[in-house]
Image (cartoon, rainbow, N blue to C red):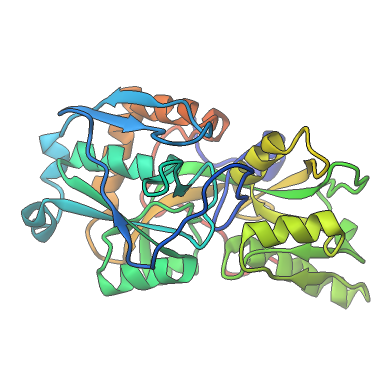
Length: 341
């Protein structure tokens, strides 16, 4: 089945993603500096343990996966010689469970994103080394060569293709979250945002989409106020206090947050979803490497190996993300257009 279909045929499900989502109650926040690295080796050769110290965000699962020599042979010579895959995660300061955050042991960078990076590294016969940074420094790390590839809920966009190459691995759906008591719903109509105050994370594809809606409303003589906060804790505090009406962010984190706070005074709900690639295209999350690095194809081939042999489905299931599955990984598939207005 194709991974591309119109928004009308897809955005009725829940979950998927880019940058900062919710820090759930009871989960440890990410700490350390932007160059902090955490290496997690397999429990034994030919096995990757995912969902470690996840504090309930995933079911810890041991997945059998070994090096595939034909795919390793596709790697650039320097990477094969180095023997390591430097994996960038942009989860500082607060993390975004269930995708990426510091686990309950206060040191292990866990979550769906670093765990997929570890599975891919195993297929490539490389030792995974996961480096945590802020979202902005994630791209600086790719540009400077500090990391080889980002597995960090990065949306494939046409703008980003000017500097990066992609290997897709998950659907990208966004969601509006509101207090449970709120009666507002997005209803697939940007005009319902008129008069509202909405928070979004800076530098993300969802910000681009929201600002385009703001501009369209302004031309109609209507106002949409956009606010920014440093981390998800601040977002949810603003939401519960009424300083904002809604937050637009990656659906996996919002769905997870809704479950975590369901029985608390600050319960939230999803008030609508939207494709991370806009109105006419299914958004995709992708492994992100420097343009012309030669990594996109071996990354895609490694992901497709995991899809074909069932490890990909095990990974998604462990993190309750099965409804974000793609049929195959594609190299530089169509992404969020340069002009989505």
